[in-house]
Length: 283
Image (cartoon, rainbow, N blue to C red; front, top):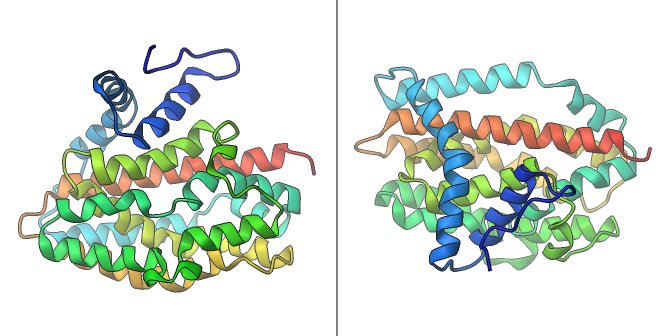
């Protein structure tokens, strides 16, 4: 049996590839499955990563790169798309549930796929990252783990808590969001892509999640702690990720920057797609 199922009219090639990649990332692949996995990566994420690496500015130090990251974040925060205003101020409960559905594959397993990056990093950088992941996993308190907070949200909204129930309804962009983190942590040739990616992500959440938190509050959602917790803790995480980059004795600044740009692109596309699907749904 082929490792990669053929695309059908109901599953465009991009959607079929992302679903297949997600499935392969969740198993121990055999030879055929590994070939399918690397083939999808070669067509999807590797060209993007290489392009961003090749176009990276000639940074003279990690400090210069972090300054440029700060500028990127400030620009994004100042120019958030109108879709964020729609979500925060106008989305109905049913439309909000579409957005929640789109990120369920990530929310139900949050940070689990990131653990393999820790032993791939130099000790000091790895420990800084591990401190972030400990928080993501609730410091051992099951009720505080971010994945449990997402379950709490789904439960209040009357939505399934089973991962498999979201496999057929998640968009290709939503799959790419989840698959990107798997690739960064386990598959990228260098873990330094991950450092740039997560330094960006933990900082961008501080403005990117504002519309989600405001929508949950406006709609009277009681268990919206998934969003408020990120707004509270991710400034702390952002500082740790900067520490992880500064701790590198031999930083590959082009790869770190490629991680920043790659994540900005994929997170932005997933968010815009989720809100567009919500707007097109029943009001």
